[in-house]
Structures are given as structure tokens and as C-alpha cells.
Image (cartoon, rainbow, N blue to C red; front, side, top):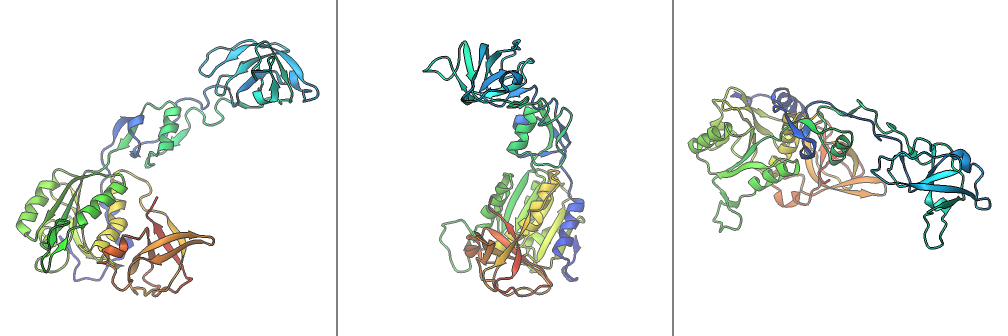
Length: 420
């Protein structure tokens, strides 16, 4: 393992770049388009046919010749003979001569002889109790050629690129691909991920605690963060500070999953079992990252094949590390083109101490106010890493650059919004 514990710190940007340059994309597979929601495209997807497939009606009404109703108005209705009806899904193409019309429903193909559709609201039927005419309709508003007709291909032409490699298949994209005739798409799968929380002080939630023990929450934290980015944890374990036992677990998991996320045990201490267990791994490096919280990190590829992301044990440090480094890496494994969340401008509602020389990632509560987004610290900025209680109220992070220092009330601050 490359050990940078005694060297100068790397920036958060440098550490993320190191990861993204090395983490592999998972092998693609073909799936029916209906099963691909939430996955990432591994190749461009094109429209198989025009959208719409044919000229079709945008309204329930009457298909007719626009010239026949050019002079129509409420005081000068024009009567047309009704030939029949074209419903949605119908393949009929009735001939329409001068002075004639057909009832037509929204989405139904427009007859070749018609060049306009008049909404039923702009007509009078031949019966007082039914707005739809059976034999004769009176049109009380003119219609120009092309009125209320969706032209074949006006949405998307056959062969047009609808989504590109690296795009997330959202519900809207899946629907667009299905509508354009795509039956199957090439996608990358979600990574298989194991979560291991370490620390002899960790006890199950609700268990009696003696001095020195704390409830274990990191496994739930990381598994939840995985779920929030669409990945279900394959295994979730908690281990005490036994280096040999942990090394055996690591070796077993490394051949079963694509990534292992651990919390705790990454510092220089005598009982930091994660750092000790991966010391013999040549493709794993230990670094000090210029970020607060989350300075110590061990990251890289294990000999067994999986990537390890060994995060600090303090809960907020683990959560920040996941956001900055793990989430982007998991998205890159899926082939995602954009791997970082959007950063938005906000205004600080109060003052807080910065962290000169390090990127400060502060859990905040972000609210939308008339002037824009406003953020308030949800934890005491002087003690962030362990503040799991206060961070539970956060819905984002404020990002304060290493060159900036303190933040005053009213200052602009970039934020990451975590809630949808």
C-alpha cells in the first residue's frame, strides 16, 4: 500500500481524480427497456421510427377540409355531412370530399383527405342531448390548414439520438425509448457493494451500554446512502478490532462484490485494523485529504478484485467521504457521464468559523426563501465529524474552499442539496 500518512495532504479534487482515473466501468449487458429504469446507458439509443408515427389529431373533434370552414363563425355556422368516425388505434383512412367531415378522437390518424381538425367544442351536433353529431355537424369557428394536427416526426425523427452513453435512464427516458420503438438497451449494472463497520466499541442499537461503548450506526448510514443512490448493499457487517479476522473477511468479500465500503480503522493508531489489513495491498493507497471532516482515506483495488473505500469512523466524516469520493466512484462504475451533484449558490444565514487550508464540508439545513436558497449549519462547525445527532437534520452540505476561511452571515456559499 502506498502510504501518504507522513506526507503533505492532497486536495479533495486530486483524490477524486485519482479514483476516477482508475475505477473500472462494469461490463455492459442488454436488457428489455422496461427493466432498465435507474440504470445507465452503455451505448447511444436511437429512435426506431418517427414520433408521432403518423399525422394524428391533437383534439377530440372533426377532421375536415379547412377550405370548407374558412368562413365559419357563431353567426354563420357551416354545416357538413358526417361520414363516420376514426377512433384512437384505428387504421381506417376514410375519403373526405368537399362539405364532409368525420368524427375523430385524440391520437387517431388524420385521414389523408383532411388538413385540419375542429374541436368538438367549436361545433353543434344534430341532437340537443348529444354534443356529437351523427349525420350533420355545424362548425361555428374557422380552422386554418394544419390546425390541431400533430405532424408525423415533428417530435422526433427516425434515427435521432434520444439518449447517449452515460445517461441515467430516468422514467421519462425509458418512456421516450419505448415510444420510439426501442425494445432493448445496452446498460451497465449497479455495482455489488458490501458494507463493513469496524470498532470494538460498537454495539447493536438498543443494547445496554457500558462505559466506552456506543450504539453502532455507521452500517445503517452507509447502507442508506447506497440505497439513496440506487444501490442495495449485498452484505452489511460489523466487526471488532481484530486485524486477522477482519483481513479474512476482506479477502472473502473481495471476490464476491465490486466494492467494499468500510468505516473506522483508517488512522495511524495501533488498533486501526483497516489500515493495517490493507498495508500489503499494492494498489491501495492511504492519504490525508485536505478536507474537513474526512481527512484520512484508504482507497484502491484489492488483490481479490473489489475496490475498497475505507472511510473514517466518525459518522459525519463517513457521510462526507461517501458524498465526495464513494458516490462518484460508484456512478463511474456504472458508466455515468456526470458523477457529481450540482452545486448551487446559497446565502449563509449565520456566521461560522472556516477551516483555512482545507475544504470545509459543513452539514447545513437549506431552505428556499423569497430571495433564493439560504443555508444554516445543522451542527457546531467547531466539532463536525462526530455530530451524528445534528447532521440528521441536514439536507445538504455547504462547501467552503480552503483559501476562504471564515463565513459571515449574508455571504454567498455553494451548497450541495441532498434531498430530492
